[in-house]
Length: 208
Image (cartoon, rainbow, N blue to C red; front, side, top):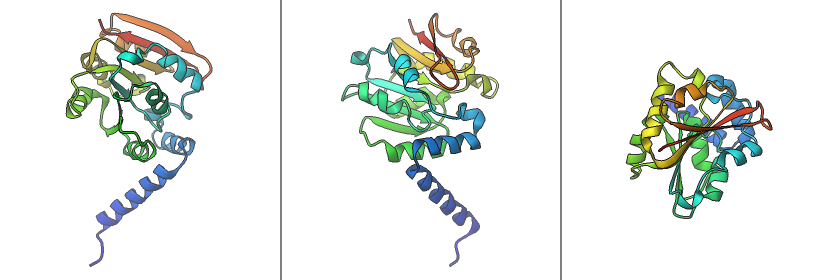
């Protein structure tokens, strides 16, 4: 019996995602930037200098659950996994199904979970995986270009999902992101990393 047009479309989508998963990270990142420039935000992944500085304030000895929003091709994932304890967990949340498929194929580590979903649902995602909170949450999401109201919801849900003493780590190309996180975090540290394309604003919002 001939396959329906819907079945053929699904097969083509599956084949496309398998090809993407086998592609190199730069090729995959560039392809997704061309498809979703507003959501991806940058034409190339973050620099090593940015990664080092962004993660430098994490208390790794007391980190059991680390969450990343918008992991893309996993530029931060390996550095995070390299620093985490053997019994810790990294949860990477992305709305882009192609990125999630890519990460699941590329990163083979029992501590790693790639989840297709919204950062606004972080507490539900944590609960589904058996966790009550996160120690740190990292985000490279382009807050200023998200649909109206979404950035505020994500910031609020992030604050609720963090344990006391935890932090929201944010890297952005616009300082406007501070307007989203300031209502939810009394203490916010700020830095910059110029060795990145484009130069990035760095924020650490600490939960009391």
